[in-house]
Image 1 (tube, rainbow, N blue to C red):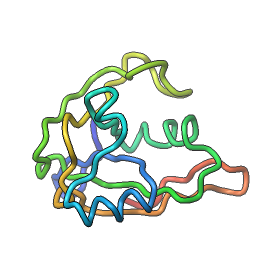
Image 2: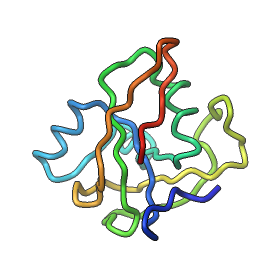
Image 3: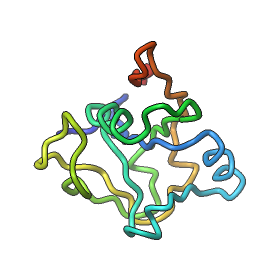
Length: 127
């Protein structure tokens, strides 16, 4: 599965809370609990992110989507199979972008609110 392209730039996506993003801006880098527990930060492509959001974040209304420019990442990026059972709509053969270190805020090209529809399912904002 290929990442989303915008003007020849490869972009990957990460779901976090608005609060965690604001804290990251103060520090200059974003980290997630998975960096300590699994050694990397989970990211997705535009084709994967809604499956992940609806499987693991349903019911939350404080989420933002970090749109990350791969070329600006200071930490290592690897494309790997799902870590754990895949969300509905995701194949065990899909490769996910995993960031092996903090995400420098300068790599974040956009921050978008992640909203849900009336049924509670998340909607991908325009990238």
